[in-house]
Image 1 (cartoon, rainbow, N blue to C red):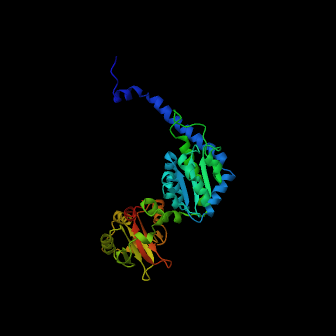
Image 2 (tube, one colour):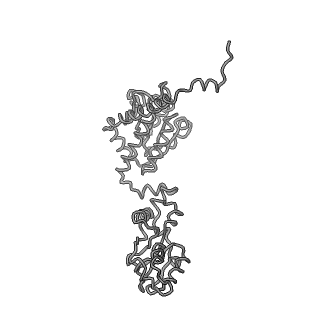
Image 3 (cartoon, rainbow, N blue to C red):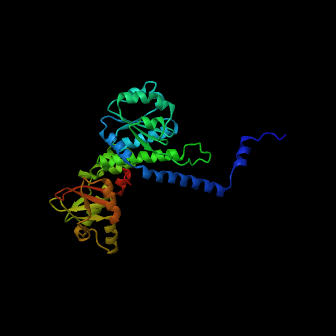
Length: 338
């Protein structure tokens, strides 16, 4: 009798050919895509009623789910909360041991269960109904206890799981996740939720910086602005550029308004012309006018201007066109906008 194979031996024996692995991966994606596509036909009056309950909610949207449905429920709650619909996730098992007190009469409950017969959910259903909080469910079984008990039942049923054994929640969880996104986006638009609202709930990371940071927050101001007046010699302008380190200097008139800008690029062109920096005035070689922005635009918009115009710096002016600041690409990089 042959000795039993070790775990590594068993693994090696079960390894499939690369082509079969590719085919399996593609089949999973195709199966789940079909499951999501089928949901479009189920966006019906029930979906509208669910959204209406959530829009009228004076408290929070409380999401419930066990196992994989619980993981999906946590993500749905997070998406709702970050898009203008205050929500949080409660584990049904913990709810029956005290956490049910987190749910109030002003809340709306969204329960997820593919079978619709999850015991931990069924245990707390009578208590939720007694509270009077509207109950919305997403289930793959319209005849289930959960579906029949809910005020609104959303059908997220699938023909079959992507798992070849038909056991691991795959297509069913993808369908529930997609329907949760559909609810969140519908509510977002109904509430008139804006990019600025989104930024306020995402202050950290590059997303928050792109949506919240204004030019005034990162520009150089006051004595840190590189600037010279009309009539300044070019050599003095170069000293100012070197001292301030932005690769440019604003050229202003006696009222503080921008007459032009002298940049590193202008310097290269000046050197090509063999200009005497000791006797030449800056206005004779500067770029007249220059590209300017206001201090209250988003830093991300300033970045777009730089990219579109293929420049590395911007002058910032107020409503009276007086110079109030300056910034370059390095400032945007340091701020995390790029």
